[in-house]
Length: 477
Image (cartoon, rainbow, N blue to C red; front, side):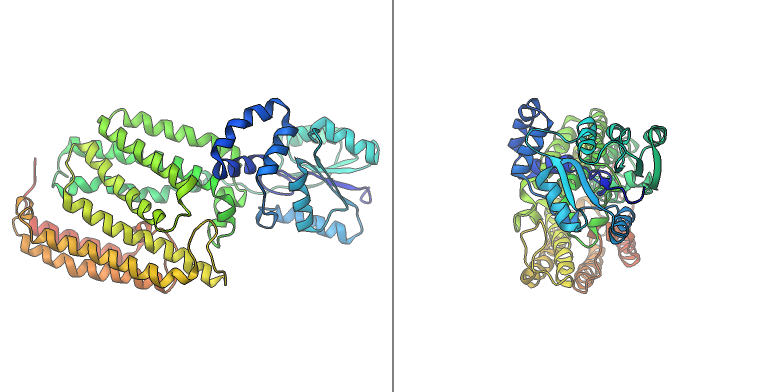
């Protein structure tokens, strides 16, 4: 039986993703308005839909998440002289690209000429070519049951338990492969660690000395939760739209969707659920907060779809998205954000946005590449990014110095002169952040890095002590 041709499914079997879903997200990113045509293509059949998408969107077969254990088995079978056949419902251009990359298959059968090669149609094609019970079939999903009815034996790859049981009743099992997909992958995809950035909604409370106001604290807490759910929804969408670039990245290729740890369709279903949760919480807060949250979401959507690869526009938007959180906190608590707070936040977050881009570009340089996938920067831009980013960071400290020397400071602080001690602490922190980034030691979002970095936490604690001493117990009701 081992010498029978081995016919291999692609989506979910050879690769740990679905090419139709992949290509639709790619189409959405490259040409969002083309999605308006998708329902009309679908009405003409699934094969026509796949054909039209394949005409507009290409795939990089080299970066797809292959099932490594199963691929190694196929290589072993090929070395033993077994005939291997790729039989997939994916469009032929995609199937040919994958076959060309893995260099294992003697023949390729795929969706083409109006025929969607799935389920019963695939079974009929394979029986026509190899005869009833004349082949072994490797698959993973319910549509493959129709093929296993006609196969001599089955190879099960990441097959759900219900499908696995039915397959065993239809034919013998030659091999089973099962990748462990941990539940923690959902939490990782939501990037809960990035929720640390949403602590920025508390900044207006702290700046206005209202952190003892229980009602304001409750409102800020709700704003934190709403922003977290909204941001997670955005992160999922961003990851689904950015799959090719993530897979070309040294660290991002390990993200749940890029690596195949989570099905893309499940991510697409989570996006609106998380967003609805954020909207539901926003209804409990002032309308201004909902408007800011909506502006944040639309800005992030524009960033993900069009502006992420626009040089300089991207970092300015990233700085704005950080500042949105501060404005949202002010809107939730009814606090008017001061000019000083907004000016400081824009400069310091522009610096941190450039830290993020510099770190990504530095990693590209270490890989001996010249450009970052999905970005508009070149490695030659590294010195310029460092100059602009550090200058922006020092400008934020200048804003702080002007605030300390302003009339406004006397309204909030009994001993404003003590605030001068904050300036050398900030100078040290900004300089250290850029030094670590220049050395290639910045491996995370800089705000998340600061929340985990011991030295940054010590600096933050010292700044808090200075602000507390300067306030002299002066709190607003």
